Length: 584
Ligand SMILES: [Zn+2]
Image (spheres, rainbow, N blue to C red):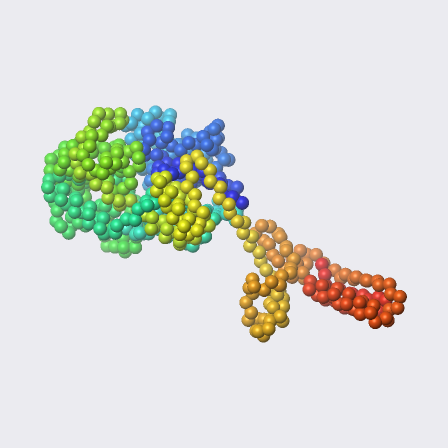
């Protein structure tokens, strides 16, 4: 038996996560993301792999979305509304609620501002129609898609509503982690999963080779850098995505401003703060325990020192801190502000998360944050930009680092591991480490490459108590230790076979029964069988032949008794007869 996996995106790459899995005969698409590094046809996964004719009905049995980040859900309306997938589609409640806001934001930037042709994208109405098809699910709820085909979401930390999906089809099992965080932060808890022992665990590996310093140290570093810049009259730009790290860093800065009495204004892209607060209030049960506890007294997302931003403030003189969307400087307001603020060496840009190759964020970080001249893409107006401001990368991404990934593998105990959502070389390193430390087969297929994972078919068999009792009695009788049979443990050391009748109703109902029980189970009558042996003897009373007849009778009896059959012997001259009282 095999599980087949083909990444259409996120194979040896970060972006447009879309993993196709064939498990137990079902085709499942795990995430349906877009690639933030591309603005052409490469932004979406290559769905032609599934069907060149574009007919997806009946080809995919299930789509699951792990969380609302666009690199995990950004192609979904295209897949359902433009390409026509209309099968089962699952995401958690917060993911279903927040996804359309980010999708609409993405649509606006792509179609309205960057001039991507509408025919190659989806409309606002299609986003709405797509969301109607999403069935929301709750944590650790087992959802039966079809008989013998179920899924169960587990808490993944990372962002509000993020989850891992456990999938079982018949005998085969899989855990898809999506993005996850193994350490709790200011507003979310750590990922949490049972010891599922799946056949395959597909895990993200964004930070495959990174062991991050302590969170406290990173927070201190960020606060010091921000404080120094604003005290010297500079501006701080923090490009973020609307929900997620933004709230984490707002909590950090708001508390710092409260403590230190700093008075430089902190702004957040207008409109998003209120929306974000509303969702955090609505889904407070998905945040961490501390926030849940204090929520009764005060909603910590009602920030005291953070105000909505207005575009006219871009050219305002004086210090300020601005959280602007999107993250990675991949367009929008954050890019607009960056172009204005980057030429001044008094300013600071903090990249608080991973930047995908192809984005301006990745470009400005790639020379270690030193002053440079960058070429702007045509959709950002073209021309050159002198970047003289300080650029700092401080990892506040809520992804598991190498230690976290290893911890989850240890916790889940999979039979095979597959790495996705990472950079090829880093994945290669982690792959070798997993093989060495856990002795597990580990895979990292590239986009479009197929990985086959062999699974062992486990057949659960129920043993009848009568049969086990018989074996125990046999063991007890053989025992030289003299332990009463009822106290003896059954173990593989005893080579005596357990003889019974295998009765199969279906794959999930296999029993090994005592012959009498089997007759009842199968509803067949028991028969009595008589066997007659005739031995032509010249002189039946001659001792050698009499002994031979006796020996033969004894061995037949022994064999029959071994099979649990009672035997009666009667020796008539020249003839002995066995009457078998029980048989099938
Ligand atoms: Zn994510």
